[in-house]
Image (cartoon, rainbow, N blue to C red; front, side, top):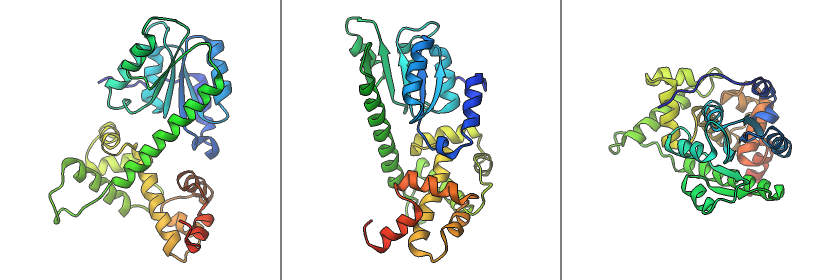
Length: 281
């Protein structure tokens, strides 16, 4: 398995600085892989207001960026130097770190059976240029919504059963260990992937790979999900203020807590409380 090098471009460095803004940080991540600078810039301009955008100029660079940034979706050209879009797609779907990422392939070529070859390579969609950008935007939005729905459904299926009740599989034992440690340290705003990996006595890479394979979430997403689910329970049953609940579940910034809560539950904490009182939920 190849290891990603921590090499990012100047534009990506700026992008990382932009992510200090919680409004940007909460957006889905889209990686655009396109060797034509002008067309790549055009795609970015159409998507930049809705998503976090990272860019690559060929398949090899796209592979490195996918490992480094863990995008929610990849848009890739087919005809590119060094590594073309088909080769990139095959590489992504063969690697368990990236096989879950939906890929849209774009091409100006009218190769016979191009659509079939593109889908067989592992892409979820194959669009011929020129195309209506509104169609591309609709496809991107639909795929991201579907991907998020899958993650939400998967997370709801996670059950953490006491070992005394029944024998657990390796997957269940691992998820239970992760869940229990995260739950025990919910009020610690310093809880991190590094602390979690140290507790489990595995590397951060192993933690990322196993948690992604078993739960469909990265360690950061898993920790945030557990915190938010606990916060939702407290909002429903506790008389504490929203800020107190935010601190109690490890969020050091109540404003950030409100933003991530709304991103998950489609309503603010105060709206959630009112909905519970009105028996809307």
